[in-house]
Image (tube, rainbow, N blue to C red; front, side, top):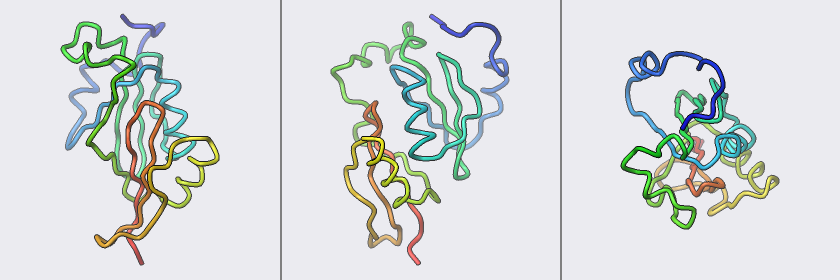
Amino acid sequence: MKLRKGESWMPADEYGRSLTGLGVNLLVPKIERALRFQTEVLEAEIVYEDPDFAVLRGYGAEWMFHADHTYRDHPLHGSLGSDLARGVGIELRLHGCDPDAAERRARDLGYTVFAGAMDKPHGLREAYLLDEDGYLWVPDVPIG
């Protein structure tokens, strides 16, 4: 069931054909709530948003969100209960996103900080931040 009123920013098939490389699509209960973390903590740019779907861009990457209600006829629908954790075992890394600044914004806005910004042996300074939907975001920058 779509909640969007009117036309989308571009036809879905046209957008689909434009995608290349690795794609990330996250299912979220509410698009608006997901966008708050993305824009206020990660400082991502909203390319497009409506109540059903959103596209974001930042740090050389593009990713998307679909609202749970758009997956009613999808095989994943049964795994979208509010009592189930999402994103377990996946790190969504944003290379080039300042982890110290993102951590500060996350704390100021009341998000969960799993691990504050620190230098790691693999040459990156990174922080582990959890959004309201349970996805783990890892902003990182090279050390030095």
